[in-house]
Length: 173
Image 1 (cartoon, one colour):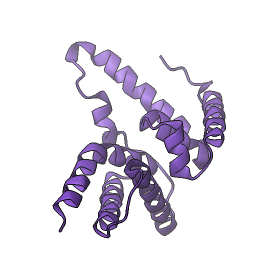
Image 2 (cartoon, rainbow, N blue to C red; image 1 turned 180 degrees about the vertical axis):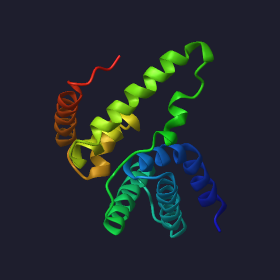
Image 3 (tube, rainbow, N blue to C red; image 1 turned 120 degrees about the vertical axis):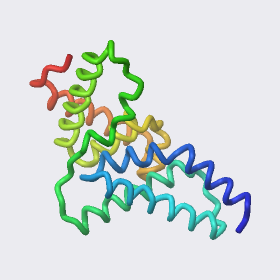
Image 4 (cartoon, helix red, strand yellow; image 1 turned 90 degrees about the vertical axis):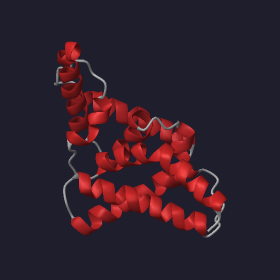
């Protein structure tokens, strides 16, 4: 086994595993399925690296692989999407006891936004999650989705407008 390939993969795993788990958790119903998708995503990446494939943008490739695995998951399972907030404990990590009210409000607001996001079309959910949750640039999202940057910008704008419509009747503090 090539030591450089192994070190390259380990570095990618170290930098990206949490983000990939968060992405999978937003897309599937339970933590075990999210963990399986994440593991399989990295396994497929490792297979490509070992085969000597030149990978231009590994981060984009990880999302492409994970997206395909999520689609396969729903194809096989035929389940409705839902999100367990337990998977997002790290979002509120580090809250102090003195600020517990704020942490609770943050968590409730986060839950409301997640719930509202799930009412949107998949194509809108995808760009919102990639851009605002995973903090991926427009150009990288375009690469992941195989679309032009302008199309991604338009989709993101429309997704935000739809999300505002869904959230309008909900009061978020």
